[in-house]
Length: 353
Ligand code: CP3
Image (cartoon, rainbow, N blue to C red):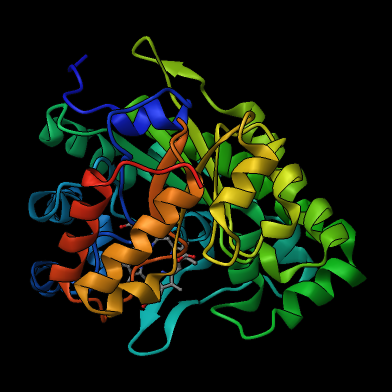
């Protein structure tokens, strides 16, 4: 096993103390970086970029070369999972992700099966192994997946949705079918995350981006229940180290205590809740990851420094904080603003409020 030169991210996730707060950003490899746009052009498309391990490795490393992030996240997309389940993912310019064969009829739902991640998602597993080699212990590598509920939103809606009416109608009218989809997807996600861990991912994160669209009762039934199953099925230790897990429900602030009890080591927070209040609610049970509003990165560097210190001080001088945004970075972010953010996080010592 290669020795980690910087393991602050893994230590913070396990609520061990660190000399400064580690930082990485959701979607840190993306269109705000000109070098990403260049590689994407060479690859031909976003999906071609995801499906070629050499290109995926190249763009995974780009933000690390530019900024001093404390973690790498494998370059891929959550929608590779439904693609591997046979739905046919494609991206149409300006419209976001789409599926050729969304789940619309009962027989299509009934024949849904768990794919073998080492076959149907081989390109991701290979990219994880390649990035691990290329990182050479610089920082830990994060593997990820979408949550069953969030993946089901895309699988049933057939793409992005404004109000989730189709998927919610299925959940309310045919809970039996909805639970079948979520059950198959949860088993797929567990196998997929474990395949990434076996290939070298040193932490894993589950993106429940649309959990916050549900009522509390529906969230518990259709999202949280499956997140718990995933947490319970994850490989916990590899290469003689704990493999920490993170769950991120966007819009989940009101259900924080239930989420913190779901079996993950850390909880991602969107920007709506004060992270100090979140820590007061769950601080002894899980680490917290977040939670700067991504829009702050569109403001001048002095404002970014002030707002970043506000988040760090709200959490306070305690172990268990991984600095991040409350959601993915905007494609309109000037790269030099990210530099200002990383510098502030690495140099500020959180103050007790
Ligand atoms: O964080 C990282 O750097 C890793 C890469 C990553 C991507 N997508 C790359 C990507 C991760 C972790 C994701 C997760 C993802 N994908 C989520 C969950 C997180 C979230 O944002 O809530 C969701 C919901 C998706 C689905 C998805 N993929 C959408 C809706 C879109 C289109 C929106 C857009 O920004 O255009 C994508 C495409 C996508 N995934 C891009 C990137 C860099 C942009 C593609 C491009 O280059 O044109």
